[in-house]
Every structure is written in structure tokens, then in C-alpha cells.
Amino acid sequence: MQYNKVEICGVNTSNLKVLTEKEKKELLNIIKNGTESEKKLAREKMINGNLRLVLSVIQRFQNRGENPDDLFQVGVIGLIKAIDNFDCSLDVRFSTYGVPMIIGEVRRYLRDNNAVRVSRSMRDTAYHAMQIKEELTNKLNREPSVEEIAEKMELPKHTVVLALEAIVEPVSLYEPLFTDGNDTIYVMDQIGDTSDDSDWIDEISIKDNIRGLSPREKKIIGLRFFKGKTQMEVADEIGISQAQVSRIEKSALQRIKGE
Image 1 (cartoon, helix red, strand yellow):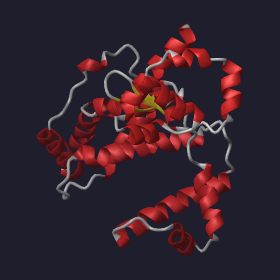
Image 2 (cartoon, one colour):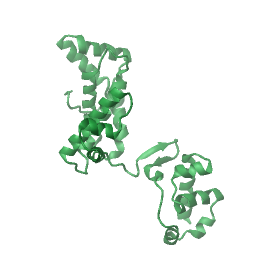
Image 3 (cartoon, one colour):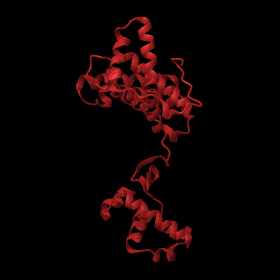
Image 4 (cartoon, one colour):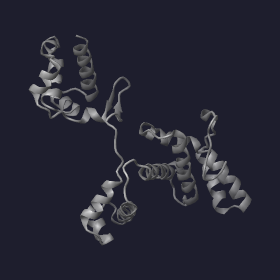
């Protein structure tokens, strides 16, 4: 294994070793206090023993259209940074520290490889703002405001806001937000429809088909597509869960299309 690149092609990931917390602590102590040969061997074991942790993290980014092998290799870089910077004196699990480091490395990779090109100077401003935010959060024991970050950076507020917004990753309308095991709720399900009611009805000509729906189905379809409400708003108004709204809505639309 190379420290900055990990090849997993052809490897059965289910067979990857998983270290116990005790084993992790022992290896981390060796990495910090052992001889050079002991440190190298312990570091290798620590990396190999946490590859499944990397796999679990990159699954969160599987709908971004990126090559899983690339994300895995980037995630391992975050893992290595976490191993090298972990403070053994802290009474925390390694995963508590390692997971955010891995996520941060993957997000940095996705930002830098974003199809929407952002100037280097704006990215640098954004990364500096994120560092200042972290410093102020530790100092104030709360999340700082944009004004406080801008003041610390000695920059106008709008410059900081634009920089931070420029590196926000685009989100697919089909990115899943929640699933109850049967139906999945996507980003698009959280967006209301503000189009004109009569235009929508005239275009798809479903008035007669809607009459065949149950009262609850009619109400949900009406609120969703005629009133432009989100599934969450409909759920609150009717008194059922959003997952139920999603299920009823999809069933009703399938019947309408079928007829």
C-alpha cells in the first residue's frame, strides 16, 4: 500500500479487517511513542484496519457521479491525516475524529473538481473563511455569524458570503433525503410547484381521471400541484407522515397516468 494512494480493485471489501477500539489505541500510542520501525508498521496496520470506515463515509457521496475508486483514495488521504494528527491524550474514539477528517477531504476534492469553475482567489478566500469559522467556534463555543468572520478576516461581508456560496456543491433534485424502507423522499419532493393551476390542468388533461381518486388522494394532489405545497407542508396539514404523503402521491399519479 502506498500512503497517498490505495488500490482496492479486485479486493473483497467485506474481508477487510476491522480493529477494536483497544487495538486502535495501542496502535496510535505506538505511532506516537514507538521506534521508527514500530511506527511504520503500526501506521500500516492502522490504515488497513480503518479502510471500512472510509468505505462507509464515501457511501454518502455515491450519488454525485464520481468514480468510487477516486473517492475511496481521497478518503484514505483524509484517514491518514486523521491518524497523523490524532491526539492520544483526548478521551475520544478515533472514528469521532477520523470521520469528519475523511468527509472534509472528500468535500474538498469535490469542490476542487466541481464542474462550475471557481477562481482560485475566491476558493482561497472561502477556505480561509472556513478556517476562521472553526477558530471562532472553538473560541466562542458557538457558531460565529458571517459578520464576525468577515471582521476577523478584515473583508467586506458580501465578499465572504460570495466566496462561501461559490464552493457550495450543487445538489441533485434526485438526491435522497429520507427513506422509511419502502418509499424514498428526494430533494425534488421538498420543492413546491408555483406554476399556474389552470395551465397545469389544461396541459395534461386529467380532470376526469382525478375524479376517480379517493378524497384523500384528491386533497394531496390538489395541495401538491394546485397549491404548490411541499410534501412536508401537506403532511402537516393532513396529519400524516411525509413518507405516507409520498406513497399516496406516487400511487395516485400512477393511476392517473395509467388511465
